[in-house]
Structure formats: structure tokens, C-alpha cells
Image 1: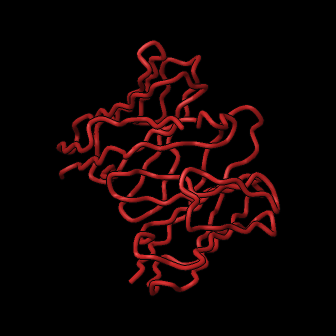
Image 2: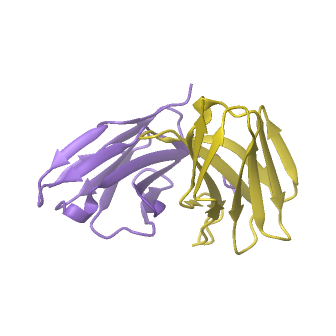
Length: 113
Length: 115
């Protein structure tokens, strides 16, 4: 099944700076989702972007999707220490595109106060 | 508020023991999933269920089984735990969105250590 590949694996920034992480994939998709995971906790859904959308916003989050390049990016603006977490992109499984999701290894973001 | 509850946050078991990980959701979701998460490997799907008494193998089902007797409850069973099953186990549920993947709601995770 298809798996997204996040880049970079780890990112360390100062509070107030913007953080950008990327996700690349191999085959066409209907949508792409981003999740966040605080250390030792479950994942929390952040945003879903459909294949016919190019950009989506939610608070300080901005997600873009470029289907021609098969890539997505997640931008967190004006980062805070509380944004420190792992971020994952999730793609519909090729086996059953209706309901299964596959996850990459994530980007570990550290925001320094 | 949507809630997925995993029965144990931390478990320590011995090799060969039978282990039950329980997951309950209160959203009346049809779909439930068990993932395991290991450093550098991301989340890998073990089993999933689209309906009561229904189960399907995910990417790594070996050494695991599941049970879904009631819509709200999805149990993961390790018949004979082994040290390579030491991991974080994550349960998730999703409402039915025919033909379109929806949002997954995750529990807090169960960290299992097998000695």
C-alpha cells in the first residue's frame, strides 16, 4: 500500500518562526490528511485536503497540495513551544481507497522557546 | 466530544502470555482500526473492521487476532506475546464515508513491553 514520505525527518526552530514540512507520494490520491502526535500520545487530525484543492487553511496551519508533483506541504506560522510534536501525512490505501489510511514516519518538530 | 478509549496506557507482559488490548469508541462509527507504531517505521496497520463480527487483515497481521462482537468495541489479541511485539499500539475509528476516506479518531495508545 502507498505510504507518504515526510521531509525533513526532524526540524528544530525558534518560537515565532514558521515551520514547513513536506510529504511526497507515488500514485494518485483522492485526498491527503495531516495529523499531529504529541510525545507518547495518540494522533490528532489536523486537516484534510482533497485532490481538487490546492490550498487549505486552518488557524495557523496552511496546507498545499500539488498533484502534478505528488507532494503536499504543511506550514505552521508563528510557531509556539506547544507546537512541538510529530507531524504525519496520511494517504488513502491503494488496497481500499474508501477507508484505510497509511502513514509515513513523520517529521519531528521541536520549537525552542 | 468524540472519544476513543484504550483500556491500558502501559502494560508489561512476559513472553508467551496472552494479551488483550481493548478499544471502545462512543461515536457509533462503523470502522475501527489497530495500528502499531515503532521508531523509524511510522504507523503500520495490523487489522481493521468495517462492521460487527467483520475483520480484515492489514499490512502486518502475523501474531495478532482481533474481535469485534459489538459495534463500539474492537479488541486486539496477542495469542502468545513475543519480544518483537513490544511497541505502541494505537486504536482508531472512522465514520462511514462511502467512497471517500474520512478522518481517523485515535485513542491515547497502549505501550506494551514484552519481557
